[in-house]
Image 1 (cartoon, one colour):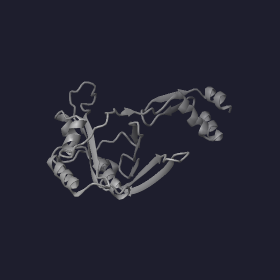
Image 2 (cartoon, helix red, strand yellow):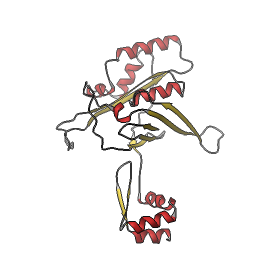
Image 3 (tube, helix red, strand yellow):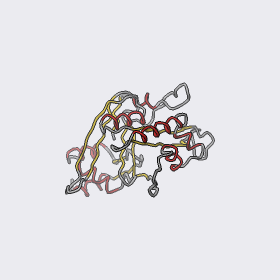
Image 4 (cartoon, one colour):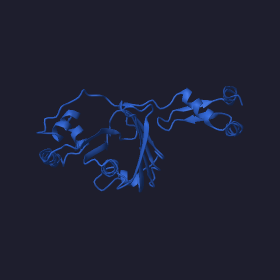
Length: 240
């Protein structure tokens, strides 16, 4: 997913797969945004106006290679949950509800060198299947109303686990649970990937970089890891 807003964050990129591996970054991470009157982070002001681009790959039965699907919707508020929910309804034609949040404010928490850190982050999503009957719709609406005052982060702070959230959302609907899985940070960089990036550049451009710099530094946008490569090593490896 690519969120191309015109706010000071200069866009948001998120990548994930069916194995729950995810990574992402913003164009400008050094942004100081004033909080909303209620004290919450004003994500919408950071993102700004623009468009949400979603690119998916899916390999259907009988296909030799995965197919690529693209869709675009206008950002509604710059708030992640609201914009993704709008995309699901507008582009995917899926009716449902989605909530997500991050709580920042861990003053005094070990490891928080600036007086604050993320102490709670959570989200949930529920949508109606094509065969859902009126009774299921009515029950879901009732359940959503019952937790309307509980944000996902409040649930976490009160000790709720993912299954507790699902039980509240699907109360009275006899949910069946699959085995739980743990999200993980996707691999984002390596020495070999750094070399592949250099190899993709035109050789004239690489020569210009070597002429202008005593050392070449390659920085991963996802994890901010920096790799310094000596010009002579680049010349030898790329046969310049």
